[in-house]
Length: 242
Ligand SMILES: C[S@@+](CC[C@H](N)C(=O)[O-])C[C@H]1O[C@@H](n2cnc3c(N)ncnc32)[C@H](O)[C@@H]1O
Image (tube, rainbow, N blue to C red):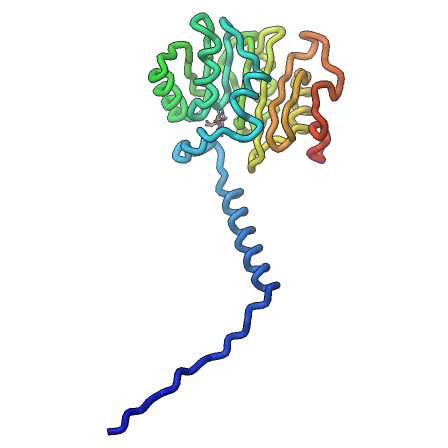
């Protein structure tokens, strides 16, 4: 019996040109970026809460302290605390006589903050479920208000700023932290919105994609000169919108 032997067949494969490989890689990168951008929904999903505990560059606890300057005995409001990364750091600095109100539109976030507060024996945090566009507090209630990576995801941030100005005590301060994502408010835009809400800038740290800015009620003290406290490259207009 004859055995049929076959020689291996080699099919010539044309090499993929470098230009095509780059185009495929760029397409995949763009698709990933689009998925990240479009998947960034508001309000921030509780299911993704693990990421909220990752400190963001330029918005660290130390930098937030330096701009917010919490003092014992103060009454403060945090808008959009998420799982409480900042709340648990700020509340102890207010001491037993101080009080931190945390306001969020999602009950799950508030429950999470309160569970953590209990584990840390912190009894000075008061949760309120509400929409930050209508703050359920009397005029002039707070020594300070802050919102870190929250303002941009609330529709009508101009309304939130007007409400914050209303519930701030005379001489009180508002600190806003923003980080680049789909809901980010560039610094120049925030500066304009705050001005329209009767708040003037007193300090600003970090580049526009990751910054902290402090405001006071206009007329509460002498406004800083335009550009004072601003590092090079941080000035209004760096986002191209001012
Ligand atoms: C991205 S998280 C930031 C959490 C926290 N500040 C941090 O830096 O880890 C934004 C928070 O804003 C809250 N939020 C969104 N829209 C809101 C609204 N209209 N009123 C109050 N809170 C709101 C979300 O529920 C969420 O807890």
